[in-house]
Image 1 (cartoon, rainbow, N blue to C red):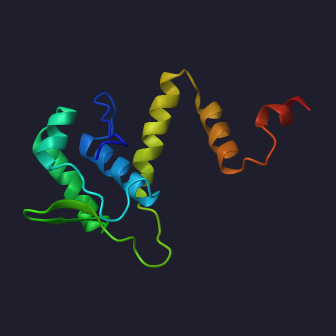
Image 2: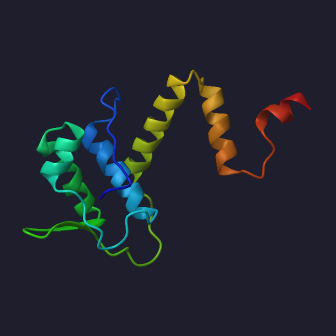
Length: 136
């Protein structure tokens, strides 16, 4: 896996294994990682991220349990075939993404109202921005 890159924010309240799981899960579900793509070995990704191998192994186990990857001894870990039919998003992955977004937004100085407004606008891009409705 050359691109895209997985990053871990060690200052985040989200545990590193959950960050890895959420990022890889999102890359798989959005198609940026396709069926059959090989993931780095546990040791390689742990080294790249400066983490313990057990941390990466836990993320891989959870991705395997979610049927997003498959791992075979000697063959490594690869992206699994997409699930048939519509799927519900993994609640813990959504929570991780939300916490990461909130943490990043707060680092930019955004308050709760600004964060919520931004999310609402992103969910409904055809809706007029909040600030223009308040001013009008």
